[in-house]
Amino acid sequence: MELMLTIFGEGKDLNALQMSSRGIVMFIIALILLRISGRRSFGLRTPLDNIIVILLGAVMSRAVVGASPFFPVVISCLAITLLHRLFGALIANSKWFGRFVEGEKIPLFEDGQFRRDKMKRVQLCKEDIMQGVRKSALTEDMDDIDKIYIERNGEISSIKKKR
Image 1 (cartoon, rainbow, N blue to C red):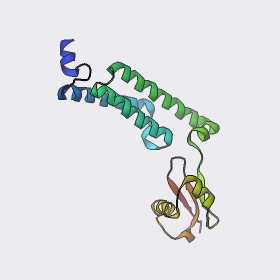
Image 2 (cartoon, rainbow, N blue to C red):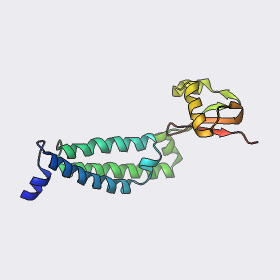
Image 3 (tube, one colour):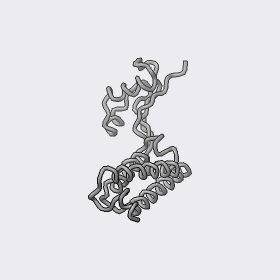
């Protein structure tokens, strides 16, 4: 027990060794939680996935700096991860739940016209959309573009016309 206190410390008065030791353990726990959560938490970057990243970072840091007791932090992180996993399963299996949690793609350009009403709704200007077009379609020529959407994760995607 004495060795554990020397390595991990207790409370908020931690030295560099103790914070480093806690950081290493939390890193390993984060890897385990990532495996439990699944690939979507860092792959899709939807609002739901961003929530888990931010929340886990905030909660886990409390264990590293000694602001909260270590084991309750780990249990809280596990609960957050399992909730994320559950929401991911519900999103994958229920269109309604997916739309409720993550929204829907929104058309920003159709039939050769920018949809100003939709652009206003999502607070994007034409240059924001063109940046997405350049990245996704590798062109600036709008004559080559059939449709542009803002996806559920906030990215802009374009569909080229079939020739």
